[in-house]
Length: 87
Image (cartoon, rainbow, N blue to C red; front, side, top):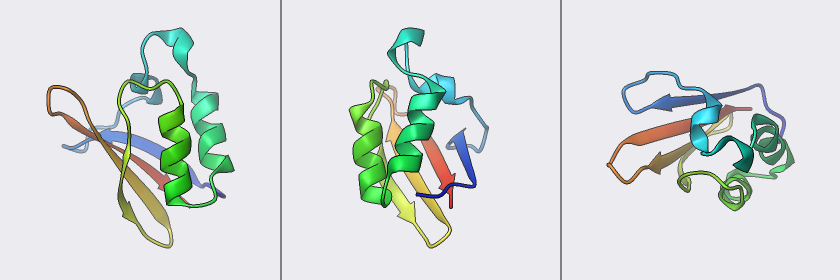
């Protein structure tokens, strides 16, 4: 998938760093996430590839349009975050 930008933000719109997707630091990297996004053929494939990484919580497809894909994840406290990929 050709990507223009990747954003990670909370449900209130506060931007967050991609490093907040995993813990501890040696489990994953920003490069792994970028590779998963670039190698994905479509939104469903992107969800599958990201969920194969060792992230803290799995993603679900929230919305897909011709220009963007938005994925949602909810942590154990009920906090929702979004990963938005602009094509």
